[in-house]
Image (cartoon, rainbow, N blue to C red):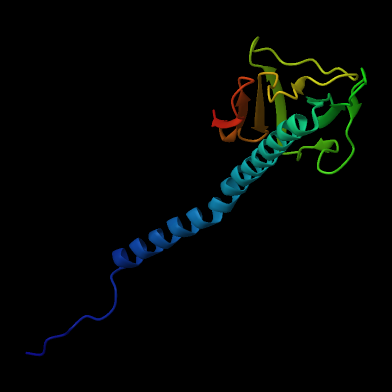
Length: 167
């Protein structure tokens, strides 16, 4: 008797391989989409956190007051109250010039004391960085328009450092 050996793969083995390849391709193709939104939120949060820390130090070193606010158009603005002055001035120097967040993000600035949004005032900032290192307590919510679950908060009680917190 001659024994016949089968060579090759069965149909089930081929289907299993195709399904595994499909799952891996799906994960690979979807990762950059969700990851890029996360990177944008993290990047903007890092940028703001660095600017908050810089302006807090700058206020203490220069012995002047600085401010921060968000206008109705979505720009955030930096302010300064020059020494011997009673009027706030909007900063226009880099990196403190008015900045519009990417369209994929929105900002919400709330008072930590009252949990209500700050009202935009065209003549003064919502958050003040004092020369003695104190800050108006605030919660800045960075919200992705497409996926609110990816949002972050920047929070300070006015005395401690500005912290980044996930929702």
